[in-house]
Amino acid sequence: MRYPEIAKAIAARIHRGEYAAGDALPSETALATELGVSRSTVRRALEVVQRDQMLLSRHHGRWLVYAPSRTHDYDFSKPLMQWARTAGVSAAGTTMSVATARATAFEAAGLQVGRGDEVLRVTRLATIEDRPAVLVRATFPSWLAPALEQVPADERSLVDALVETADIEPGQTSYRVSAVAASSEDSRLLAVPRSAPLVRLLRTARVSDGRVFEFSDLRVRADELSLVVHA
Image (tube, rainbow, N blue to C red):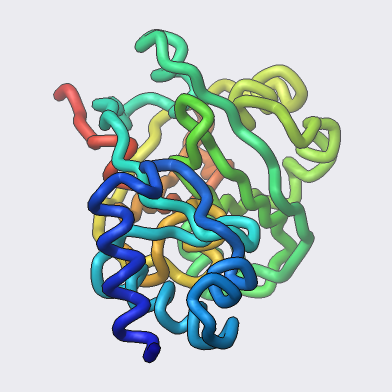
């Protein structure tokens, strides 16, 4: 049996409900044994189902049946966690990585610092109803580093934490909205197929005196959050 035939068979099982939405498929080894083919043939077939039919996603080494979910209307004029509290939606945030670096030209323009100045890069994943929804790659100026180092990884909202630890008063926040295809890292962390369409938000947040304290690149799953704004 060749991989295109296996891809059709697996897709048919999903359509028949043998593999339910949200469930993990049997391992590649188990499927290879069942079908009498090599594991590499099974993997190639699964990649076809993921790419061409978007019926699967790959998360932490497992193949999951894609589970469309109810989309929430997110008023992105508010910080995500603040919106979630007022909307009665279960949400959480987790810091995936923190690193000190030299600002690229893109980061320097967003933060209004010099190119090559020291900045802090923070990658966070926000979940909605326990599902990955927003990947945030945030850049902060060096003057916030001492405060950020005090924030625990499971802090729901960095902005809320900074208000307390750095004693800042948030001011204006602006967004630039576009679309982007999921990168390999986006795919892994957001549990979507590689190159799946995501909403991209470039966020610039200022303190009340006008200084930029955060410049972030957000990748949003459109099947989890519909972006709305109330003018």
